[in-house]
Image (cartoon, rainbow over the protein chains, first blue to last red):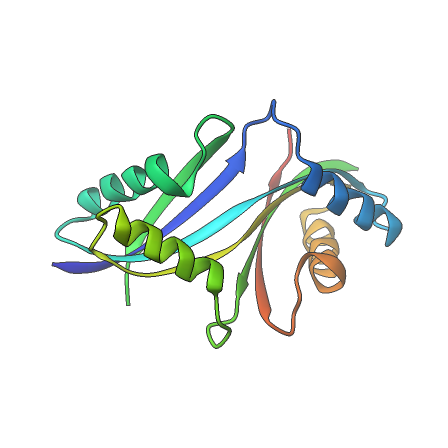
Length: 85
Length: 85
């Protein structure tokens, strides 16, 4: 059994409105960052887990995304796995 | 002037409590993901901006983090820059 570090990035699908991203965009414009053309805000989730192999860790992380970490109707997720400390 | 895609990851400093991460951790345990040992939740922010060079885009993104995107008292941020579409 080894320890793995899963980095999960959950973002809204492009077709979905992002009021939080819009608020950040307006804030940046107010602060003078005129060069910004768009902002989208999502979640970054660090998951530490024990698993026999990297593939198994990746499979379990995908199951976690499908069942809890992402709302797959409106969000997509990306998984990176590296050796945990 | 070119278009750049900034990927900003904002995470709580290790010493800072993460109630959201704890709630996700409990949820995963309830769903049977016994192998999870810890969960930390942060923000993933996609910023599209125009800038003459990648270095300038990176510098401006850091300024955005320092002034709005991250609360540097309790959070740290990581910036990746790639060519925008």
